[in-house]
Image (tube, rainbow, N blue to C red):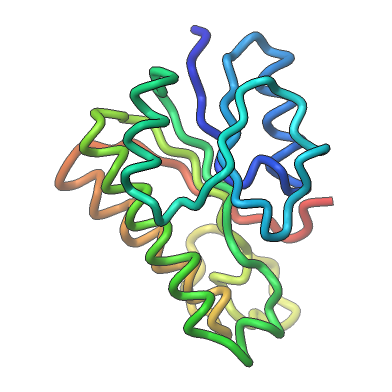
Length: 173
């Protein structure tokens, strides 16, 4: 079933590749990116919205204008070392931004949400093989911010039936 899909952070490395793959599969892809780290040239869809996920009015307008049915959320700050020296910026962008995106999705009746998380939610597992059942014990603000979003999505499902899946990459390349 083809859908109208919003890809946040779709001008970044992972987001731009995901957006292209979705588009090649026939979906209508709308990219939302503030271009703080992404590049406009990386967006290969006509439907591009320059803006921030923390802007609820922009989110509502984008959902309505494009008939968004699913969100694939890549927009985040992701440099671990920077998250340690500037944690509040990471919490504002990654957690507050995701909260506004999730809330706007619920208000718009969107029921599908794919989240680009990270294996950093597991913390330092040493040399153990990691599986999904392992404890989530992030050791830096970046990993903590991603785990907080996972928890918000779990709660959003319980309260509002927003279905979601979180991908925990070890190395996206």
